[in-house]
Figure 1 (cartoon, rainbow, N blue to C red):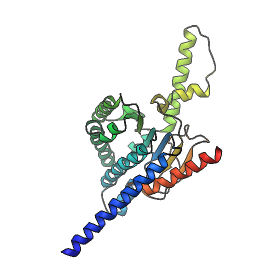
Figure 2 (figure 1 turned 90 degrees about the vertical axis):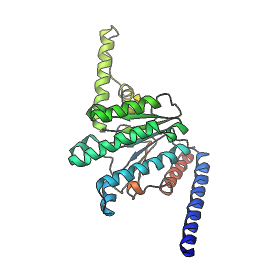
Figure 3 (figure 1 turned 60 degrees about the horizontal axis):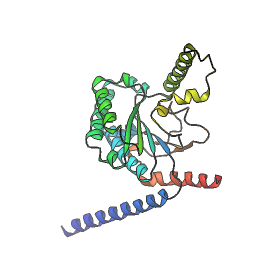
Figure 4 (figure 1 turned 180 degrees about the vertical axis):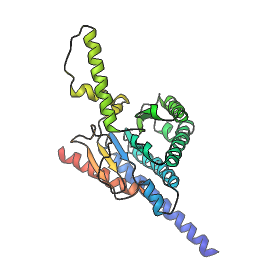
Length: 270
């Protein structure tokens, strides 16, 4: 009995000390240059579930818990914008049960974010759902509208939840919008003009959501590809980081070296 209580007490104390140490490190890092915009490809939920002999839905739920922790780390560091790849358009091709589970999880968590959004309120986060929202079920579209409306006045930070999203779809839509605007200007007598790179950039989903340029893109699970995510935004100044850990396992200790590497590169250019 005493041994069990002693073990619990020492475990609790160890966790407290680790937590305080991590908070101290984050405060120190926040004093240096920090990225304005960080994006995550939250990869590995399904493999995490299989490795732990759990249902796929369990992996996605654990992935959401990891997202909350990652968001708190980012906002503690005063990172202005975080974008997360929550659901690709191609994911609709997955099994009906998995897609249904994901849609209900998205609905539930969007409602929680909106109605019990202590994290979003604490850091003044405006939530945007970025992508082909028209492809979502009606009940998810309703929760998206509610979450966006309730956080619309927040202006300190931005959270872009990309779902259903594909970079090629975003670029196609941006080009179409740029052409339409140019034609409207020509019809108003301004005359035709060539469409520039900036015209297209201005019509990207992320730009319309108020996002700054992308500084860091992180992909977990050890897979080294972009998977049709933020291809336009990943320019030569974007730092790509591939972490050999499933998304539900992503922790502060995985993110700290990424920020240190970013700061090292910023200081080297100074």
